Length: 227
Length: 193
Image (tube, rainbow over all chains, first blue to last red):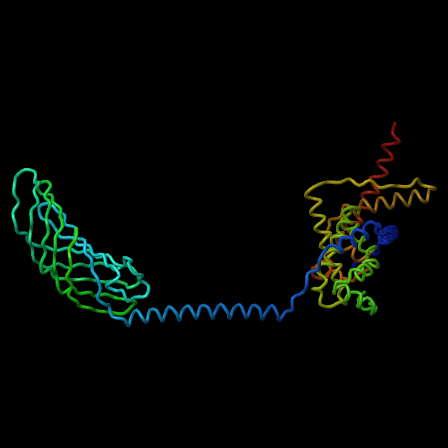
């Protein structure tokens, strides 16, 4: 008892009477019935839990480690391999008004960096555009609205700079055009577009950063310019 | 209570822990009356007390395999009971209000009538106690627990049990005094023309 004053006798009697209450028989029966239908929760061993956690954690660490190793191997292989030669398809697009500029878009297909394992055959892995100045030769015939096809021939140099998409990082391409023979379709005065033609260029130089390492490659290319 | 546990009781707990429902029935049979009486005082409702006891015992059966020390069975089941009573009290406060109707046998003589009146006053005063005050009185006066055992059953410090007991008894006395003042006033009102 935590109270210094004793409880009244009537209260003590009342509490004693309350303490002597008997549970209904239905309660005992209900509990027994529910116990028969309630499954027990089995205890898991303490060390079992810890070992399970330890095993899970170790597995996770091992999986992460393996993934890191695979990535490192792939990156190392990419770094060590030199860019290889391949097929370069060009789709030139010339546009301009009074002073036209040359825009050449490169679509690299399964060639330039075909040795990289991440690039499947036929995939477009790079997109290069460039600009430059050049002089046109030839003459347009007619006046007013140009409807005739006019052949131009030019030689010059240009450079292109473009980030190569994909796993190789950045790539800068430079090239020297040795021959370019395009058909210019002059639809209106001062506005023109190219038709089919041929071209040749040399000293295509690829300078890029691939997977963190500096790689230079200088190669000479020639190809067919398609509209 | 734990100090005088017979060995057979420990074996019953161990067998029940292993899934023997008959052993659990025997364990329950010797405790259910006291648990029910305690729950009645805490919940203050016969049906609620039945529900609380049933819930506590079913939880005990379900979680018995996780009881590591069979000798702690009584302390553990008391704690389950108190928790079930609190749950029941919350549930009833939330969903319904009930007015209990006490069945009173006709008094046979003046002395018995006085006893019934006293009991009713005490019950009314006890009903007005808060749940946390009722539980400390019920555990100590119905189950005969010590302060430490009461504290363990409720999950509060022993000092809190002492202070709650002090306030509970004070509130009970104040309630009895108020009932004593109220009943003569009612008699006077009934006798007035």
